[in-house]
Image (cartoon, rainbow, N blue to C red):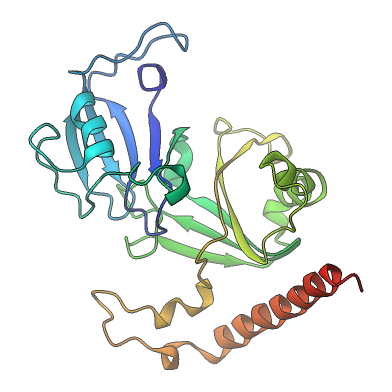
Length: 264
């Protein structure tokens, strides 16, 4: 039903590199006017783009579902992704889940990643996809622009998130008794029409990250295909100083959590 209504983002619950995150559109463009008016048939054709490298594939609904559940086989067709599918393998306990989200077309303008140490915002990153791409995952040619936590152009979003919404996050996830993660991020995508005044803009949370979150100031030490010998020595002194500041703050916050747990 969701696919028949509007373009979607279907993402697996595992990993952090964009593998298994698919931006999906109907090749025919035959979307229904109201949600629930119809459902996609098994033989409808989907156009897919994967977030890890922005490569495109075309499959039927039946092939896509088969790949998600059982991976590569005769029924799922031929796939060029580096992934193996089987996104539900192991069940919920093993992280076998899929998330179905609406697609926000203004993602091509980039997304905002808010880096937080518990409840303290320490930086904002504007992540713009490579021209022609949709994903701003690192290593795909995306452009990163760094801002401080008090950047004026994002003040409306920052104030609303920190002063109104932040305290609602953990209860909304059924974790009201748990502390906010020590080092985590929130990715925002602009959902308002172009021309909307900044104070009226609506931003959608694309995802929260709190498992294996990297420190972007240390990206220079990231070994990948075009930088196979990268090391910590490649991080500039300025970026290292900022990264050390994040680490020191994390340590302070962590001690606070432990002290609270001990009843001090």
